[in-house]
Amino acid sequence: QVQLQESGPGLVKPSQTLSLTCTVSGGSISSGGYYWSWIRQHPGKGLEWIGYIYYSGSTYYNPSLKSRVTISVDTSKNQFSLKLSSVTAADTAVYYCARALVVVSPSFDYWGQGTLVTVSS
Amino acid sequence: SYVLTQPPSVSVAPGQTARITCGGNNIGSKSVHWYQQKPGQAPVLVVYDDSDRPSGIPERFSGSNSGNTATLTISRVEAGDEADYYCQVWDSSSDPVVFGGGTKLTVL
Image 1: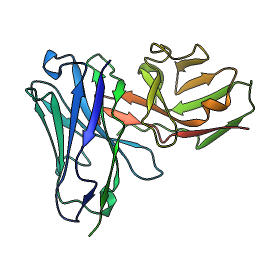
Image 2: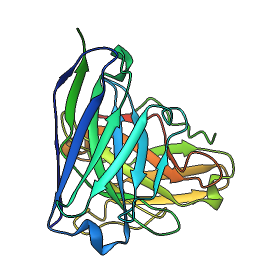
Image 3: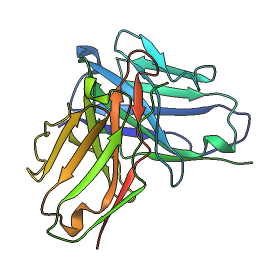
């Protein structure tokens, strides 16, 4: 059974960089075949896709966040990470990591439990 | 960018059938996925590729997709089905991952 677990600070100051890590268990990122994604949900709102990374390091980001987002992968630790720079209160959200099978139209079959990140001084 | 439109809310009595729609331009040409999200929990995939169910999802959950509307149908609705439901497509021509705004299903 694949499991994903987000970790990182729950409080980030404005203008700083939000950093989160997703640890994958029950499956290997380096085996390929999946997009490893970050998705966020503002309080009381819908889902917003942030971006994904493939095990090779190829990435694709939401154009609306692209200038501030970096997603990286560490296959030796079976982890992938999110960095979001220059955060504001508008980046306060629950951040999820999720897995999507690389097919013509991927869907997210496994999700982490989510972690709330609050941007506040 | 591609836009998916869902009704904000749908209400249904227990035992009845709930239908949640997801509108998009020529959405019938895309594969639509549906997620259920209960309060305080992560989303769960309930239907993928328009009408397929992941292992463990009850047969009461089904989907269809044609023209400009995709539909998630929940038969014999139970109190435990009360949740937010989101549709999602993969649109390679713009932002690859697009979610609908979500629909809150209330079981009366």
